[in-house]
Figure: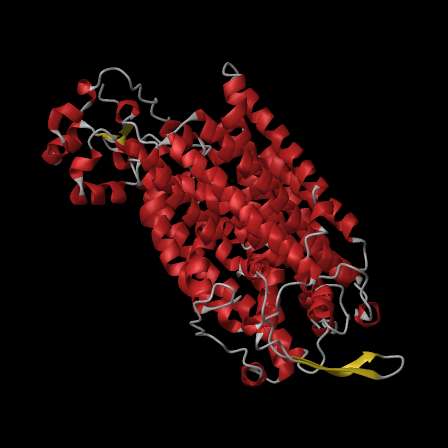
Length: 638
């Protein structure tokens, strides 16, 4: 039974009865959908041609660092609440229950960590490319390796988030998904490349509002047709889908309290502390604006993701006795939300178009953020090194060209995304392979002064290889139908074949899946993909610490400026083990005066033998930030 059901869950073939059920996509729907695309294009044209033009590379990539916190907050929200999240999350709730919604708890420590741990150091350093940090902290080699990994992951991820709404559009409109992929990419590439960061930010703001409104309408209409929240709750409870507090510690269990809260924290943290998001933080004029943006974003996450989780229960209640996945009414599980919308909102002209627009907005915002971030990374990490004499105006034009090129390159990878099965699982695995290990490298650098280049570089390569083994192995085993299934009970009492009236029957999940005599590889590849980002981060950090200890050579230690470490963490190390910091961290005179136990003047710049040449402090566009936020940590005392 496993192989048959799993092949249905990941099928990419043609749907069975869906074509007989989906209503026409009328002119009202096309009007709503087309208007969203047209407005996005208009915003790009305005900022690229009529507004304050992007004369410099910093204006093009960061909006001149004078952005308002409200559009930044909305952009933070929709940049990584992608089409994959909106389409894949309800499927997870539908199949496995409400346990995943406990991720909402993780958003609180996530926001606190960003506000007081991670954002302060980036705001202090004011990098355009976050990978510049790795060169300052470790080496040019590590900067290039992590930058390349980011480029590969970014291109693949953008292809996934566009492929997802294209499938939704195909089901609702009947138009081939490849055509819709091309349309979405062309629109996104146009407005993000011509309008730059400001166009991306303001289109993100519009798209965030559309995402929230469209999701709310779907949930409200769907719930009212079922008779209210109590009916939805009752049907979910009858199949054990209200499993909020499953404390199973087995990592193979797909959804538990721990995978949601702990795994969810480590999944979302790198997503909110990566190149695209850091650009948004440093585009703000001061810390107060950062706190406002993060607060609005937290509220938005609760509202949007909360509705998305509940939407999964509403869909289950709607198809309580007639599961459309196993009856092959749809080609793959990812299409269940579009099917639900098409059938639930068909009597409300224009609303199906609003839903499609909401899913498309999620894709547009992620891709526009992605191409802008990749442009920043390529220009800062490579172009400036190859052509150091180019002025800022020329670099701005290069950034536009790179944004366009990466968009088209990502479009080509859509055809690979078609073969990756369930998009939610594929995106989570992909992020675990690339995002987790690289974020672990930043943690090693910012948290632990005694880590070194050789140790961290080896840790990164081994961690990526290990996570690739897990991710690729699970994808292969899952597509072959060799992994044990964990989905909740599904009822197919409706006719599986409308022509002869046969019934598919009742499908019960394999409650004894843990007790089967699975082989070692199956056990390993059964680990929940929600743990992948966490495993990637932990493996990178732990191996980085171990290898740094093994390859530690006191004679080759290169003391780092204190500004390269997270302020609150460095303050903690000063209290715990001040003596251990001597030789690893170069403190300012003021810091040494405040903490005599750090070694006095012997640890100041004057005491150096000349083997260390400090990097030049990054330029800060907003002059008032120098006094407020850089302090003496960023000064070269030598």
